[in-house]
Image: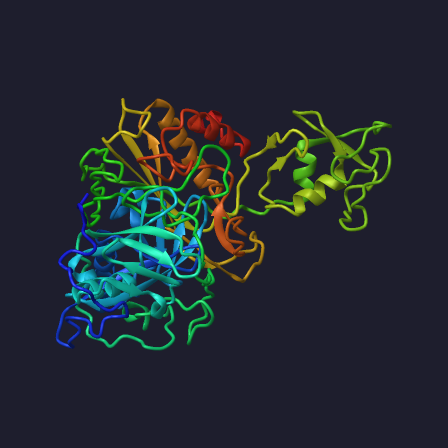
Length: 553
């Protein structure tokens, strides 16, 4: 970590407390640097580290060059784990200018700002305030530029009111003071990697910006939280007002900062931390990004690591519609006499009475009072109730007992079209030091819902793809991999529905088979070490009808 610089160095004489008169280096001929920021739960913008911004810019530039040659559009998503392994769960969705966390579905607005090359951003200077946990959280970059400009012009104090903050900063005492409550926090000036130089010469927007491909690469305002100029995308987070008093912590690290609040998940889970130092390695096919010293001072094994050539698993086809009555009669045997005191678990009527679905699901071949028993588990239901349950589902030729969940036939899901890529590399996962790692990459693009989906004919979104997942390359891990291949072919890994986290409907979501999307830690509960994960996911696969018996088929 770079040593914290003195906040008031070189300033021994009195100076005004107001904003500096002019910024050095703001001439039109100076170079410019690009800074990407995400918006926290208080509506404040937090800059990514310089190496992460460099990676984002390089991916965009490569996409633009490819687009000019081939006529294709811009890249739709950027996995941040390629720039910093600690950010493996996070993906920037370019069309909506949001950051998406794959394992929790949390979404944050992002924006791109351009600053002069000789400003704080161009010099790699970051100003930070001390949060409630004792760690350091960065100011948004325009505040960092403002503070550095004031320091360079020998100001001893500066008021952040013109920038929308109810604080003043004392460079000599190195403190931030809330003007209403007089609560004080320490501040520091830190030297980090400079932000990437941008070759864009297009003037920045000065008014409302939008997320269209025409505007966003050069937008200085990022996504607008109230309305867009000519984009149909809806913003995903509203700007919050500046909290005048003490604020909640947004960092658990002494140098990093946290892009998300803690997810409401069970178990020992907390927000992940950004690495304090990280060197950008542009992700090439067959390589993994570098992981250097983390913010707690523990060094990870240096990468890149050579990976085996990835293999692909064929995309499953849509289920072949099967005549509902024939499916019901295949798996249930009709009883001659119905149990007198037993209820049908589906309609909650007595089995000795007609089915509660006799009006809503009439059938020419099944009588309303007919009762059947499932052949393996022996649970009994109205045949017409089972017909209604099947007709309201995927209609793939399989049945699942509503009582004990026993599956009859081969269960398939409604996963949209996509691809599953698999590769291996020798680096070990925490808790599995005796073996290498299997990496699974899922690719699904947005599209139009089919007849098996909730709203046929309507578009669905695919946030956060590609999604990167990890397994230990040992015997049990390889067994899980083979079963995940079966689940993928049967369209059971994902489905189209409503995100429990964001509330967005008509989007691709996980389908009750948990994956590990973090490789180097388990701070969020979606990484390693987790000694029970492989057994748990085997149970989840079995609940979907995917067991070892499937591997011999």
